Length: 437
Image (cartoon, rainbow, N blue to C red; front, side, top):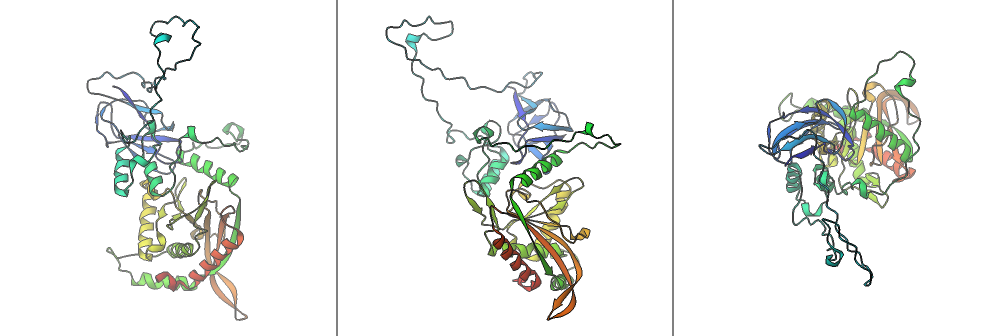
C-alpha cells in the first residue's frame, strides 16, 4: 500500500527545511535505514534515513526546494508491483467510535438508515484503548540504535515524530535528562508577542541585490528575536591580565610534537574554554536554565562555542569540558569547527549545551555584548588582548589585558552571583597553572 515519506523534524527547533539533495531516485528499492536524502535544517545539512521498506515510487519535492514544512509529504513509497499514485495518499484517519445515545423507554426508536445499526441493537461503545508501548513501538532505526547505546527504555518515551514515531530528537532529549518536546496540540497556547512591522523588499527603493534567506538564517533570526524579547538580561564586564596565560600557551605549544596523534596547538580560546568550564563547576547556579516550573542545574559542563560560517553562526559543543585536558579540548574544538564549516556536524554535537562562549578578539574587537542562546542562562563575549596601562604597587606598568562581558539571564541569577563567577574566572586565567590540575 502506498505510503507518504514525510519531511522529518531533525532538530527540536526545526519547523521547515530545504530538501538539498535526493540520494535515491524514483524506482529505487528502499530498505529501513537507507539514506534517502540530505535535508538542510536550521543548523546543518543532515542525512535522512528511511523508516519503512518498499520502492521509491514518486518524488514530490524536488532538490533545492526551500521552506518545506515538517511532516509535509516529500515522496511516495509503494510496494513492489503496486501502481504509483499521482499525488500523496491522504493520511489514514481513525474511524470515529460509535456512541450510543440513551433514549426514554417510551420513545419509538428512529428508523435505521442503510449502513447504520438500529437503535435497539446499539451497544455501549467500549472505552477507547490507549496506545500501549508494550504492544508496538514506532521508532526510527537511528533512534532505536541510539536508545540501545544509551540504555534508554523506548517504552518510557512519547514520540514526537510523524504519527507518534520516536525519532532522534526524543532520544537526545531523554539522554540529556530534558523532557522531550511535546506535540504542538498538547502545548498550552502562549500569548504572542507583538511583532514589529516587517520590512518587505518592495519597501526598499534604493538599488540593491536580493539574496534569499536560507533556512538556517530564518531560524537564527527568529531565535535571536525570541531571545531578545523574552529574556530579561543584564551585562557584567571584567578586565583580565593574560600575560601569564599567553606564556603558558607558548610553553605548552613548544612541547607539542610537530605531527602525529599527540600533536596539538593551543589557542587562547582553548584556555578560556577550560578556565570557564572549571569555574562553572564551582558555580552551578550559572550552569543552569530557567523553566516555568523549576530551575534546571546541569550535571555536566557542556560549553557551546560560537563558530562563524559564511552566512550564519553555529555553536558546536565541547561536552564535559571541565573533565578534559587542554590538548583534548584543542583538538576536539578544531575538529568540530572544521566539520561545522562543511555542514557535517551530528545533531548531538550542536544541540544543547549549558553555557556559551563567543570570541571576536581575533577580529580586533576590544569588547562587545552577545545574545543568550536559549535555554542557556549566560554567554561570555571575549574581546581582544591589548597592551594597556595598569597600576601595580602604586606604579604604572604595561600588561596584556582582555575584556570579557557576560550576558546574564536575570531569572536565573542575580548580579552578585554573576559578579562572583567572573571574579573567580579572572583569578583562574590570571594564574593559569591551575588549568593543568
